[in-house]
Image (cartoon, rainbow, N blue to C red; front, side, top):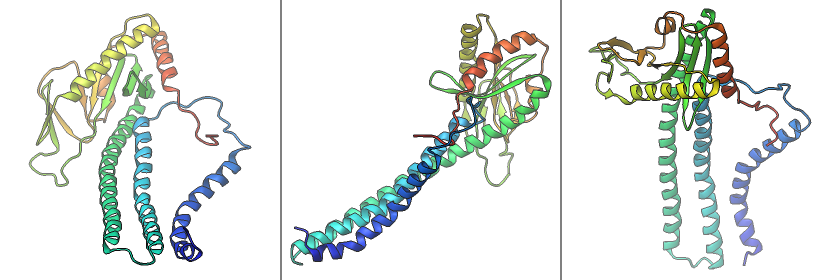
Length: 299
């Protein structure tokens, strides 16, 4: 049974746990009070920005990292409280084994939590690379607007997203972006990759899946546009790999470029009328305009 002396000894542990949890709770309470009588002035959803899905994943994994790092001291404090309680209930006659059990529990949790958080930090960095590359490609694609192209980002498909879609006079382009890190020191041409029409041959590894993925996504978009507009529409698959010097040694239906000068990639004779561009863009925009305002959210 918890006596007065036991409670007094547990106070430091309870205070530590309370100090960790109370600020977060108060912030939530005050924020809800401040926002409950206001709402966003926006009366329509926003268009998706470059890397929208990756940005959401980065936010989510960052929250998970914080959660795991906070859980370690919280459980350590709780374990200490349990240990003190058991000791007092046993009138100080506990064996050394109980001390070791508590220590091992806390150390085990600390190691597991740290390893979990570290893996999440590595994954977040990979997501950040992908996000930054999509953002860079998206910013470069904006230069096509003056050439009468409509540009959309993070197009939501069936279980995946198409990073960028360009609709303009020379056709429809489904653009997949891949971020690939380089070696810190530039030597032996480790900043170049060869594209033979099938494989992406980096300095120390080779990939084929990105080329296949770009082609699959373009084929999916073709079917979707046909079902949405009632008219067949060819879609050109494009693969962007920002920052790399690309040497093309083969011919392929998948166009590969380094994310810069998109005009050279989409250049071609006019195949779409202004009316057709508008019809396709209207359908794509309806799919991409699904981002709700996050200010003054009630949940």
